[in-house]
Length: 121
Image (cartoon, rainbow, N blue to C red; front, side):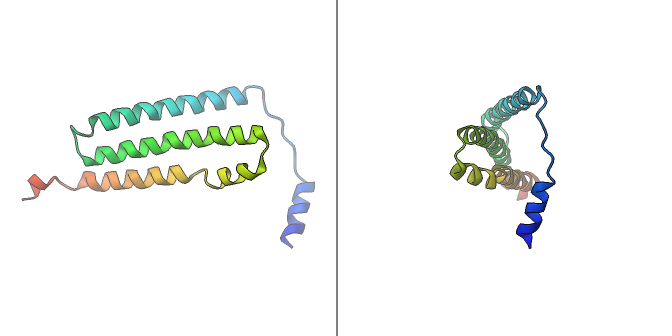
């Protein structure tokens, strides 16, 4: 039943052509995002000693988003190699580093709300 629906959907599928600016805009934003998260990671780890442990968690979240951008580059290279054995595992785990970064951010906020031991008593 599901296979029949998918085959019917494939017959009715519309093929879209990429606009000429798509690759340049996508690539530029991917590089800019990766560089931005790299700066955030470096600043976060550099300032972690001066502030608190929660700053390290935010820096780890930034590092996870750098790995997310690297994951996109791995996807592009796997598509260009046309090797189906590596494309689908990369696609399946594409948002793993976003989820891991979100967990690090939540832990960072949880630690940010906890007062230091000296203030607790």
